[in-house]
Length: 188
Ligand code: FAD
Image 1 (tube, rainbow, N blue to C red):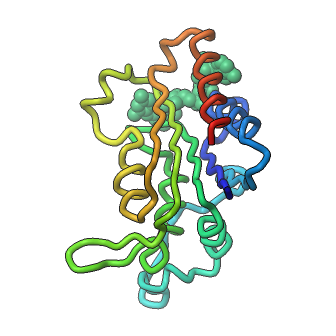
Image 2: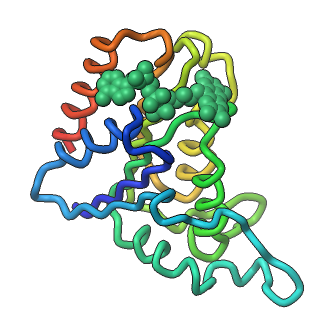
């Protein structure tokens, strides 16, 4: 299987960096794995369109071609990021704005949308500082990426692993979280 890891955290020595290494190091060697580290890439998240550069042409923006090719290549997308202000970091949001354009990732059909990325699956791993029981009553916390982005574009099933309340967990508990991530990565 072709696996693309999309990693969005500015610091490789962070807990997200540790998650990234756990996933990468525990995927079965039978898979082809590629990495997209958005901060290392210095990805420009700003979406631009105007009278000269039309929104309907974004699906063929030459600057985004290599990212479209990566998404097309992948059978399974693994997303690793922290929750910032209830949702994904801006660099990741901008990546989706610019790459998952109409005509590439989806098209409009009747009153709804038709996904173009069927047959792919995903795993979202996100971290945050809110107790797990509270997030059930909150918006987003990874659910927007799962349902309103990936689901709408046809990428399903999508597993969502939400590592809650990091600031209140012990070192041992965080190590257990990393061990569970490794086990889950091995099962892919
Ligand atoms: P780090 O800060 O790197 O690490 C977290 C803890 O894990 C630290 O104690 C660290 O020492 C420890 N650690 C690091 N590596 C390891 C390892 N290998 N093994 C064991 N322990 C380790 N949270 C919310 O809940 N809701 C929000 O809306 C929200 N908004 C935010 C907005 C901003 C702009 C920012 C900066 C943070 C926000 N947060 C929010 C908190 C954020 O989600 C967490 O800070 C983040 O998820 C922690 O992940 P990290 O990789 O940055 O962890």
